[in-house]
Length: 184
Ligand SMILES: [Zn+2]
Image (cartoon, rainbow, N blue to C red; front, side, top):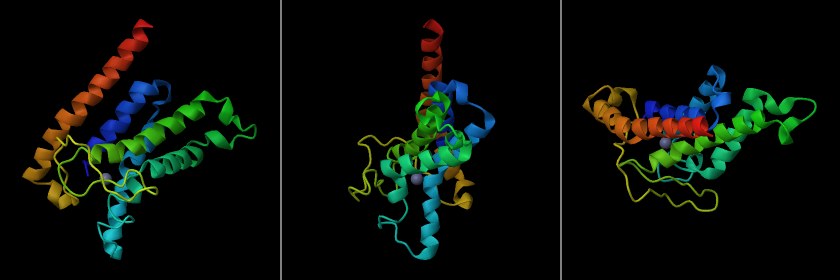
């Protein structure tokens, strides 16, 4: 995993870069939750699900399929956008934007994990393939799975690595998007 901070930085940057009109506190929180939620699969360890299983850590919850279903459902229930009587999905741009943001936030999680230098790869193509994959370039220091492990030199190394490989690109993305909007 990347750390909670790294994942939330990504979802926040995606919002300010691509969906600036939707960046209200509640939606920022929802997007942050989406960016972190795939790692709730670590609870599987307590139920004896092995790391290498498709149902284990970095398995099915770290897939494009999961991101689309989870982000879409959370947009549906979490924002109430789709529950209006006139079913505005096809015309309400804000509903579509919120759903897109939450899906992208969820998907950003496995993509960041695939840039980390430890653990197993992610089952990005589940359920079509259970293969665990990484990107060829993996500069992000992998984060410990426990809070105790994070309060250590390892945690500081992780934050420094994420500041460079997640924080800076996130700031650049938001800056470039704002610049493009300003000159339009
Ligand atoms: Zn993860």
